[in-house]
Length: 378
Image (tube, rainbow, N blue to C red; front, side, top):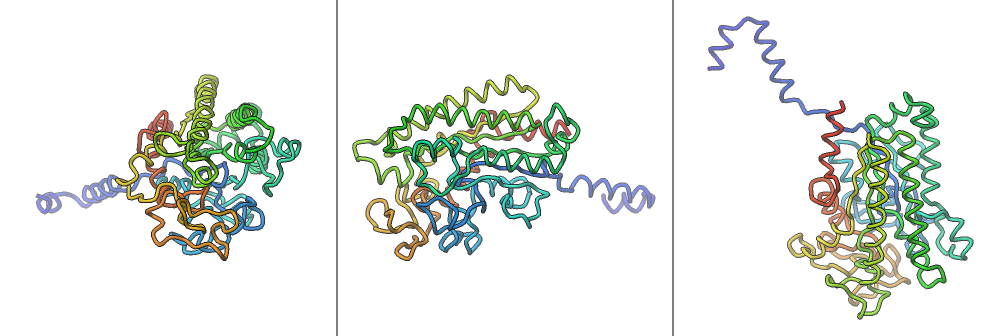
């Protein structure tokens, strides 16, 4: 049939037919041209290093960090890629360079996340003598960095410079990684109550999100806190009597759950206030819980133990021998572990989490609906 058509058709008709076929088979352009990311060590792709990161994990610039995918340390707190890396891959974009790498190509976005970062301003922790962590950055620091980026593009706000800000955000995905877990962790054992941290942290995150919306952000994903009671460090520090139905620390998981519930209500209020934007909530808590409950099916054999650490025992964790130190070692198969170094997760875990966010039922509204909204606006 093809031979008969081409023999009887004119050269112009053949040319047009071939052009049509090439256009129909061409790969569609990525929905977004850039990503702006924020958060803590779960999202940081290099804004901290061994001397500048959280004081409990000072070997991030050493192997075995980065061993699985990059085969060398990249100052990511994992053996490989993070959720934000898989997000970039799914959108056919390069991995995001850290903001502090001034020589990087930033045309496809920038990562402002900082390991150890808090939602609450650093001054609060100074005032309460809780400055044992060497990371002074908070969400406000990340916002000030972002504002400098926007100033370079003459974007002040969606109200005062609408055209300039529209140019910045029209093809940009704003990804707010989980933030706030450090705030709770830094105050453990202090006189500062969990309720105080909850109130201040949620207010800070909500204010941060609204500041981005006022700048003109149109497409945004906000991650909640994970089940922090399932992290190796939480298990290591808590009594065996404090366990929930999935074997994690009940009080810590409940704290994160309540935090997320309030945050989601605030996000809904922002949706109502800014109806022309799309704000997706990524439910890290429920996603993590689902993974723990289905760990064997997903290939995870060690749910609570750190792959990289020291001391062996049920958790393979010791503050005096954290991952990357001379006394620590890493497991042979990180893909079988959820926890990497006691606080941070393995690439395998981040991959599953990212799939649940991008393709699963743990984003509200679904991430795919955000993509449809973007494509329909083109």
